[in-house]
Image 1 (cartoon, rainbow, N blue to C red):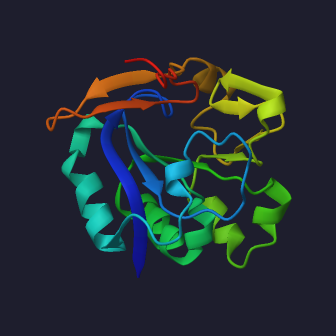
Image 2: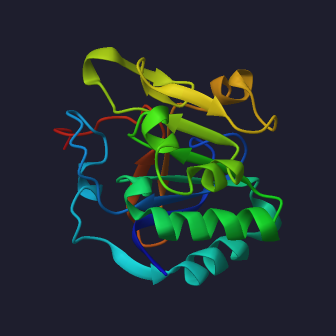
Length: 189
């Protein structure tokens, strides 16, 4: 099984509680106006990795991370690979799992094997981004998004404590901004 990956960061503090690996998957057909990650929408972009390769990369972070966050693109448009990854993480590690999806919770529940998927994650952040209801805190991009705590590992206070954004420079000199409310530097020379 493969996943089409847009980007993987091995240490983030703005994509869930604690230090986390963050996996942005490539491909989304939902078309939310004002989406922060339009580069992740193309179904042809990104890099293909076998699920075990993604799992191995996350495992290299070892004890340095508390959990894994899946975002996108739309992770659930690669449902079989995502299910394989979250199942492996849940069964073989103590890492927490947070998943962002543009699907509403009821849509996720109607997906085949959704019960198994939901049993392997700690938090699902669901709903299409709505720029007219922008929030940008507590891991909620817009007010219409819903939080679903699938375990008691985290609660609303845990998510409110997450920094809204982070900026770092990669070893290749690339400036990366991430989080639910990253700075917009477009137009800045």
